[in-house]
Image 1 (cartoon, rainbow, N blue to C red):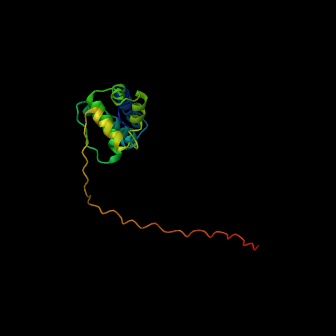
Image 2 (image 1 turned 180 degrees about the vertical axis):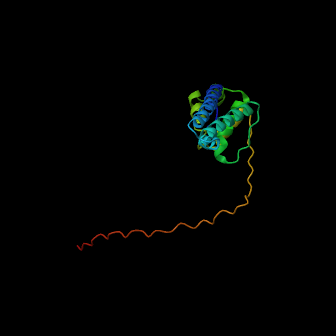
Image 3 (image 1 turned 60 degrees about the vertical axis):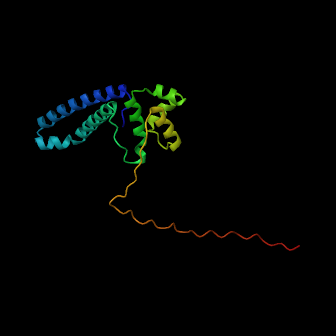
Length: 167
């Protein structure tokens, strides 16, 4: 999940505080039930992972507000980058909508879906409205992808012949 507003930030901070409190209470409860400290820690791993994720979301949002936008490592993260750019510019969804000449609801939908399947033209319009630019670099990876096999041809089913009629 990506934080898109100050309301999201406040909500996530509340969740983080509750998560930390729950971690402490659950740790104490496990120890009271006779679990060893190691067993209690292992049992709390999923909750700790959730708390860590919330901390990362908050840190990422705060970095974005400072203009520290992380590079996209895949095309599918472009939507997150567009949201981050809006946040870094300090614009609301309404202000972006005005710049694009669309409704605030459209910007909200696009951001909620992280601009999934956005066309290059639309991404460019959003970038221009936000005063941003994109840099694309293509590199070879260490791994060689598996060789794709050509698709197998399927035989066409035989059609029934129409009966011949002699006149």
